[in-house]
Image (cartoon, rainbow, N blue to C red; front, side):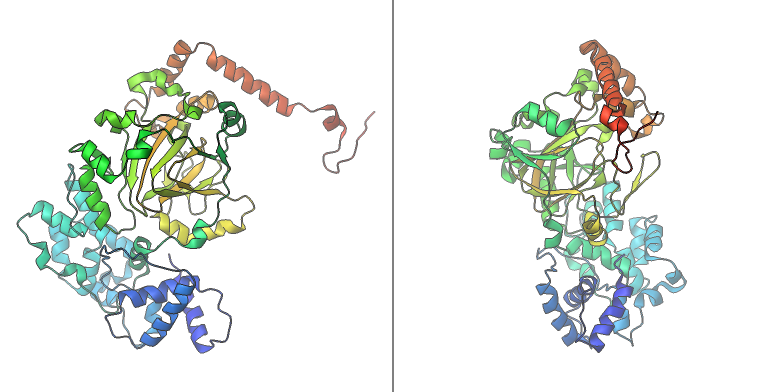
Length: 520
């Protein structure tokens, strides 16, 4: 969480002795400035102090999004602020009654079992229940579970649900979204709001340590990046793409018309999706991520071409039975993908057509902080949102000896993501991109090893036949490219033997002290 309680002591210490050096302002300014911004219509005994701290926070580079989209806070403040108001009582507890002993997360889990009508009734019980029952992610789940053919976003997920199910109801007549509850303190609910409204901090964008190349040959790419399994950012690969020239909102909406694309668990028209992305401000914005875009609108597939570095695509031997491998990706600022490894042990390339993306990549042997994969790799536990990871874990990597690879990939640039690398991506602005996963001779053996794991049926993705994919793929390779697998296995064994074989000088040198050793 935000660590607001521990921050309280730093805050009180500073107020008692302002002459002392205050180095730990980051979390404090999260508390002070945001409290001022969400409670400025309320009288506060500490108003002058908060206004003064807000100026300091601006100097330190902390800022909230300035979008006109509504933020449904209901006046929730971080728990640390309770201790700045000694006379206050947390209305969160008084309104929950005996349920106050439960964590906020558990309360929301329980409410998540209720339907819309029960949530509506519960919201009238107390101010505290009103805050919990109007928590936007609860209503988002209700909308996505009940509306399969898209939806028209109406300023909030609750209003969206009401309009979808009760079209005659005039949501403009209700002021629930503007309700402010005094003295409601919750780190959990506040962090959800903060992650939805926080701008990416400059220090999160500074590091750019990826290798960049332009105009290299395929052989150079294979030798220096694909074989050693190293990321690289490639420039100049998209200069001739029709997509790079034409793809924007207006063009895509006109071209695609009423075609629906995958957006999370629902299908939406582009016009509907852009309406949502313009209005919504939430912790995990929905991401348009469609693997069948070229089948749905064939012209989209003709307006880009695979860069020459990635044209060996061995999964193509499966024809229509191949796993999903290419996607169009569209999303607003703040949307993206939390840490994951690409499916089926494939490598990938990602081309930004419009906008820009922040990438953070960790090599296969280095698990990102805050990320906890299950022993079999089937599940990954990680922070709820990308911003939460940056807030709570990103700075710890600054002190690591082995640092992640980072970059901002801008329009016209392509990033190569090697197989097995953990990576996180967040859009810094509204972005449109194409990505493809592929298997070449360089990672074919890795893919086959992955597909024949005992629990492969739980790990394989993008295909209906998870059980037989290994046999189908191997047989297709042996039919289309006879001898390829045996040749690659032989080379791998020779390379392994070469690495184990000691040279003459290695055999006579003492590895511990670097001196010669003799035996008779």
